[in-house]
Each structure stands twice: as structure tokens, then as C-alpha cells.
Length: 256
Image (cartoon, rainbow, N blue to C red):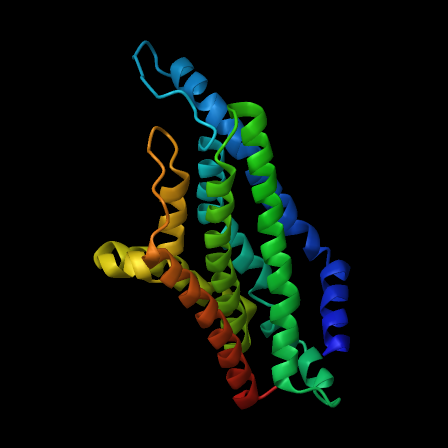
């Protein structure tokens, strides 16, 4: 396992993939508070004489914008970065050569998940830290406990998105196909929540809804986390582990 973990870390450094997500989330973390601070000015200058009344930006507006950017573009970036995490190695023969050695498929999948999952979560956490600091500098003192709680909730959904991408990359040989299939839950989960309310609260996307309500912003009061969000968080963690197991089963049955 140690050798495979080291291999994955070297792969991150060798391909410069380690730069992509931290830089992206830091950009979101800086631009979110800046946009919240400038939005009233921009709307006023573009109003063409119309009176646009907005509440003054609050310290949580910057973090709310950070979460919005992550939800719209950040998870898409995670899918694009990792859609070939296993499929590429199957396609170019690297995986077949690696498994000639006494390396089990399960150990291989776990190493992929541990290293790259940790990299994804640390990248988001770094961006969240920038969002909190810049919100403080530009907008005032935010409710730190609420923002940290929202960060923890969202981390579980981000881990789930990475895990389903890894699983689908093990299922198909084409990175592009894995990426395309990974977009389905990205768009489907929020839509299903809109169609069936319990799924929006208890399902995988429940943590995103709870984090958004907890942060508030734009004049919306903060709403404390309730038990459905905790169920959603635990569900995301359990499903993430099950997706690793599914990736192993897919590799065990696949022709390398």
C-alpha cells in the first residue's frame, strides 16, 4: 500500500495536476468576497437610471458566493481532472503492467481514492480558508463557526463527487466516457431534490442545501443545521466508500 500511495503522490506532482484544484478554489475564495463587495456598485453603475435596492453586503455573502462558484464550476473541474484516473491507465496499458506485480486491484483502488480524495478535500479547504479571510478583510467579521460547519458539510458532497468519478473511471475504458457519465449525477441529484422534497433534505444533495441555508447571505437569515443534513452527510460518506468497493468490483471483472 505504501508504494502505491507514493506512486499516486508522484503522479500528482509529475503531471502538475496538483496545481489545478488548489489554484481554482483559491481563485473562488478570493473572487467570492470581492464580487460580494463590488456587486452593489456594479449593479448601480449598470442600472441605466433604474433604482436597484440591495441590502448592504454582509460578511457571509462572500462565502456564499464561494460555495456558489464551487457548486457551478468546482465540482465540474473535479470531474474533468479525475475522469481518467483509472480509465487512462487501463487504456495505455499502465494498469495491466502494474498488476503483473503482486498488487491487488483493491489496494490499487484504495490508494487512488485516499491520495486523490485527500488532495481534492485539501484543495477545497484551502479555498474555503481564503474565502473566510477575504470575507473578514472586505466585508467584516463573519460567523466563523457557521462557515466552518458549512465547509464540513460541503466536503462530504465533494468527496462523493470525486468517488463517483473514480468509480465510473474504473467502469469504462474511455476517460471521456467516464467524464460524461460523471456529469449525470452532478445534474440529476439537484433536480431529483426539486421533484421530491425528502430527497433534497436527506439525500446526497441535502448537505449542499443545508450549507447554503446555514451561510445565508444577500439578506437571507442563517438557518441552523438540522438532523436531515447530518443524515445526508453520513449517507455521502457511506456511499463514497461503497463507490470505492464498486470500482474494485468493476476492475476485478474488467479485461485490462
